Length: 319
Picture 1: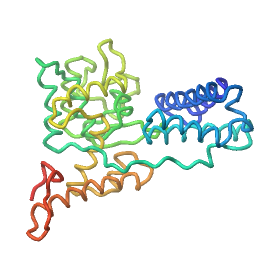
Picture 2 (picture 1 turned 45 degrees about the horizontal axis):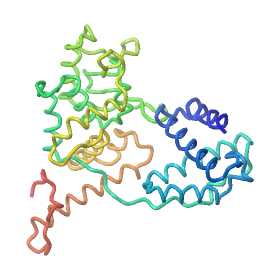
Picture 3 (picture 1 turned 120 degrees about the horizontal axis):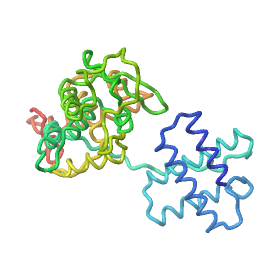
Picture 4 (picture 1 turned 60 degrees about the horizontal axis):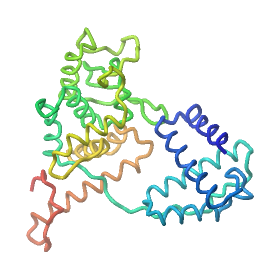
């Protein structure tokens, strides 16, 4: 089993160009299922469709449910098993995919958390308080996340020569090694420059698009190495704990980026390109957020709305 998992993880990394974190998550999911089978179904082989059948996987999902596993986590683990057995089918190791006959657990429908524009501005300002542990690096990091809508994995992958400051652009490497060039605002560029000047990472104001590529990460840890995604998450949590609504994740800044653009009239196709979504349907979830804001405005301002806006009113909406 371990050999099959290792082969699958190598396939994900080399052929699918999956990120290190994605590969690690697949491995973790599959090894948990392997451990379940060894304890609950001793003697069975995870690769053998004669022993690992649909009921085995159903039993695994029931076991996860008894452990109060979230439905989103259960869905991801079922997806991992489907992908693994699809790979084994492709390699001729199994004939059937025992996970195909199982329906995905129902997902709770909830909208992603989005910062108000005032809260986003406050968060950007917190690193300026160096007496409270703030730093130029952290300010540049937060400004870049909010200015570009980058995923945290894309943020930590930004190198010096990915910046094209004279054009207001930055080069991002996304999921599956897909690359895109997105706008970056002057405020974020100025924050990056202040951080670079402090760290003396560059002798010129900004690298140009013609610079010979040398891997030189912008966002570094105290030892000079590239920041990890976990480190960025900790940084964002530390500063956002000071917000009235509590801490947020780096992905909240991505959601806020898209929603605030939509609020100001940006079209979905442009937002799709900037976020690097393969499908427009993925981007369309932000229209639900905008609709909530429209309802809040209507409830608060229309004399015949007949209902209270209550907690639905967004702080920075303008009646």
